[in-house]
Length: 167
Ligand code: FES
Image (cartoon, rainbow, N blue to C red):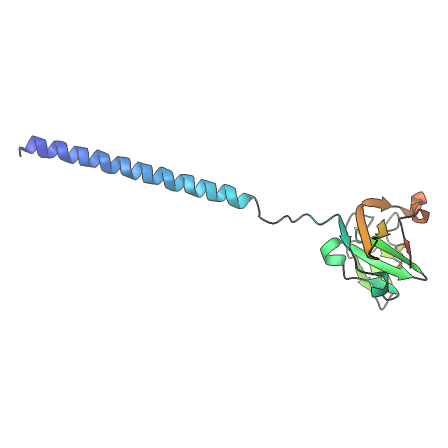
């Protein structure tokens, strides 16, 4: 084999290695890009449910119940034969108040607004009471909370059917 032929082979080998390297690099980049795209969209829907079943009225004691606060952003308040679903969003600037059972009030940590257990505001900058969500009973006797329907005290909507349950 002449040295020219050996040089040509080397060049050919070099070019095929270069092509192989380029294809491998491109495939790796495409794989990484598809992984990055895939992880941009989670498998799980983190949007909170807009309606849910909250058990039976007899499952609740009198007073504020926090079992749906973290998952659904709702306090259930049962008092003197009425049950309501209160939004846990402060009507000042949207922080999440804390229920203080010893003081019988919701207290917002952001600017100090306070609400009675029924959701009426009484201290701090909150301009209006907490909102209520629609509550109804299913044919099976379960409480259904529907967060797409909101009732505001200042608009007289707390008297409307659906803003409370007689229990
Ligand atoms: S957001 Fe609750 S007091 Fe300001």
